[in-house]
Figure: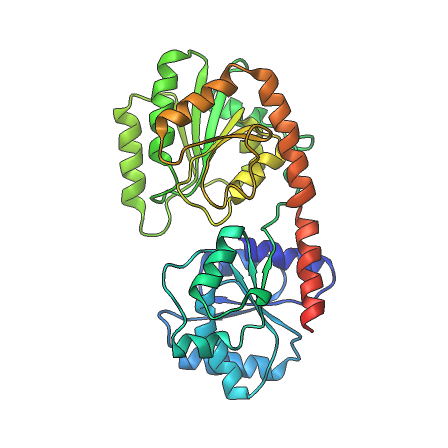
Length: 352
């Protein structure tokens, strides 16, 4: 989805973009609505001679100024096509996910030789690139992900419809998190904290926004069973939703309990919607949330600490308001999609 957001932003600026993506993937399906040229390929595993030849043909027919890839695995398709053409086009790699595998062997050094520069979306990812790849310090640029602050604007979006849909009363405090159902996102801590808070306060409702990732349906079932065992009848599971700004508008306190995060897109979306938050003090989050100003940070994995930090916001409406205003201002100044796109376009100019 970050890739598609980038494509939209570049197209708005009159830049011609063509998209190479895995056939019948989520990005392929969603990109069909963008009105751009799409080159879907089948690329399972690592070695794709036919896909590389097809890509070489596409590159040979077009005078591309730059190739921007959003996954290091794409290099296994891209580099052989460039080698076949004996062509050097600036290649920019945005690294969204940290790797635990060192990639400094001979084969990976050959692959990364074709990477002109890499974008790290957070300080943690920048360190990870230096530790695991052959890229040098001056080849890495720190540019965070961005959010559309016009789309995510509390003055334009109203959460009343969502609150009515789930029968959340006007005086209820709705506490929520948003993440795909995947281990490490902190669903367990959120449910544990919710169960404790539920016994102490009578006006709380809880909401979890998101769906299971492919192959992780059993984990989703486990989380829902845990919630049922915790007697959380006032917990809402929304499943997949396309109306994220409206859902965030309906929430009073946002919780981001992830154990480790390269970058918290859900967090900056909530902050753009002027939501006070309680966040795990984990890498990736520390680039975004400001403890005591936009958010309260809690010890990662610690449901008890999470509970206590949520209590502070429950009992202090003035703090919720001040955090909310500071949160949106921080996003506008640092993570606005226009600012992020400006920096990426400046990098394009530098590389070409």
